Each structure stands twice: as C-alpha cells, then as structure tokens.
Length: 302
Image 1 (tube, rainbow, N blue to C red):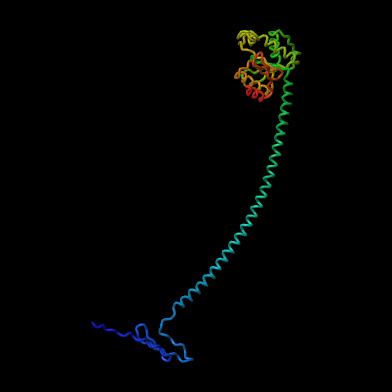
Image 2 (spheres, rainbow, N blue to C red):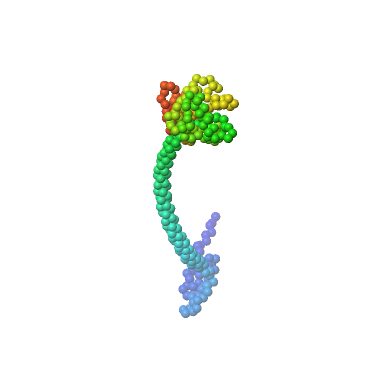
C-alpha cells in the first residue's frame, strides 16, 4: 500500500527589518512599525512587565521596614540603657544602705558584747554583795533562838514572854536571868505557830539552851518531849520546837536539805551557827551546804 508523505513545513520567514512583522504562537502575523525618531512614546498592546514592577514595590517596602525596625531597636536600646542606669543608681543606693546597716550591726554586736561583759561583772558583784549581806544577817542572828508553839495569851508583852522563857530554862535546868536576854518578841508568821524569838547576850548561852533541849528530848516517848503543857497545865501538850534563828536564804537551804535527806537516804540534817549540814550516817563525813548548787553536787554523786 503506497504511503503518502507530507513534505515538512517551510521555515517561517524572518521578519523584515523594515516592517517588523512576526507571527504569534497561532501563526497569525503581527506587524509593528518602528516609531520614527523623535516621535513620542507609543503604547504597546502587549502586557506590561508587571514582575519587575512588583519587585520594585517590594524592595521599597523592605527598605521602609528596615528603617522602622532600626528606629524601634534604637528606642529599645535607649529604654534599656535608661533602665540600666536607674538600676545601677538603685543598686548603689541599696549597697550604701547595706553598708550602713552592716556598720550599725557591727556596732550593735560590739555593744551587746560589752553589755554581756558588764552583766557578768554585775552578777559577780551582786553575788559578792549577797554573800556579804548574808554574813552580816547571820552574825546579827547568831545569838538568837526561835521557839514555836508557845500559846499566845491576852495582853501579851515582853515581860509575860520572859516569864515563859525563864520557866523553860527551869525545865531544862538552866538559869536564865533577864540580864542574859538582849531582846524577846513574838514573830508573826504565815502558819499558826507564831514563833517567839529570843536574842541572848552570848552565843555560849544560846548553844547551852539548844544542847539542853536536845538532851531533854533524847530517849523521851512521844508526848513527853518538851511541850506547851510543861509551861501551863491548861495548855495542850503541843510540842515546842526550839532552833536557832536563820536568815531567809539559810531557811530555804535548810528546807531543800531536809527534802534531799528524806529522798536520798540521809539520816542527819541540822544547822549550826547559821550553816546547814548533811550527813548520811554515823560513819560518813558531813557536807556543808552553803549554796543550792552544793545539793546538786551531792545529787550528781549518787
């Protein structure tokens, strides 16, 4: 079967420089005539170069944004520098305040240390003065005794009290004359005993009375010890307690020592010339109690 061949299409004629005719994509001829020299710009029916136009616009906007960004950055930097300066000023003020407070704190520490030293010295001085006062009070009472449970009578005075003390001396086989008594009075106490205080003229007579009372009560049955009935048959047989007069400090020590005696198995607790003593048994050594700390030391040795 014979083949029909179609000859190839001839090449499109090149545009003439004089006419400027070209074909478009569909093969239609487009003819343009160059404008004469010096003629005004002619509009072309083709589309303008929008791409380049858009690029130009974008680039101009970018430059404007950069300028605004630069202004904002400069403003932020300025604000930051201002804030930084304010913070530096505040920090310096705070540092100065802290330095002042630190200096004052050091002054306070120095004053406190000085006051502590003065306080310790004052405590030592107060303790020394208290001991001296205690010695003076003890010496002022060294010749006195207290007799508890002597019944009180109407219109009581020093003479009636002296007669009772003289009668007690007779019971104890002691001759007590009015010249032997420096002073006598009844002391009001919180309890009902209201002791009678007798201040003798000598320590020797005071010791004789205390020794005689101890000897009288020794080996006596209950109810036969020295009591008010010995002074007057109309009185109840209430026991009479005779002891040397003590200062308030010694009374407190004596109370604590007796409590220690009962709770720690000690058998003896007594006073002599205003001093408190403790003794565990006949064969043990005695302990002199001058301060409350002495009792604590004994407690710690157990």
